[in-house]
Length: 284
Ligand SMILES: [Zn+2]
Image 1 (cartoon, rainbow, N blue to C red):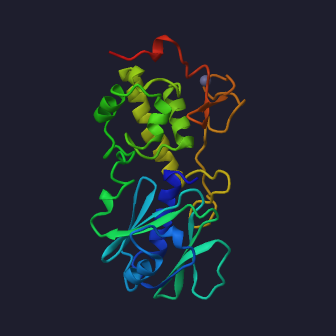
Image 2: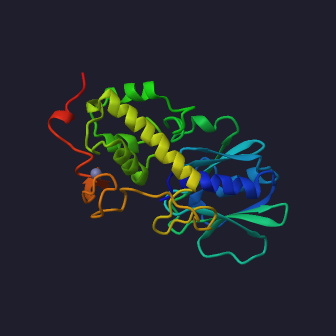
């Protein structure tokens, strides 16, 4: 599944390829990709003649800013975009084709058909369910230490699932949450309100650091996911703990362990990220 850094890479790739281009026609081959209230026929009609001014991103949602509409696209598990000359044969799993007036197509492919697209009136894209409740983007301009501290203080939930739910800060999927907790030396099962002030600060900086480096590197290439528009990532962020089960911790040499937390494979160093009865108690 693409995480935020991969989606940001897709956003940049799409910006280079289709920003400023106008949609001449749309073919939808799998209706369920288009979510209500629009039928695929209405979706097509509304997009005719619209220009793609820019592509924004919130969390893992891509937001195409058009003349009258914002087209919101979520890639989910395997969705990806490709740009081809109009008339080139469609590859297997092509579900939506945007014909551009410059003789090219923007094509959406999705092996598992879990991805979704929808249109909302321009200006309302931040009020859409799914986007509305997202936490701040993980950059210092948006994500601030003090509100992060307050948010953790009021939650007794384990820190890993809390960060995965995207409400306190966006961008931490299963890979980067493990990396951030490792960097901050915090056990994934620590209750959020048991983190000391120093730990919250370490975690805050780790999240900005890990996601910042991943965005810069264009994301990781894990499993079948290819980052920008089908082109496999040339750069990969070095993962220190995710997928390193049994390998020595780069800090202390202890073999990395794997366990399940909230049904997710979770990697940690049992020496650097300790869970004790004492450090599990709320900080008062
Ligand atoms: Zn260690």
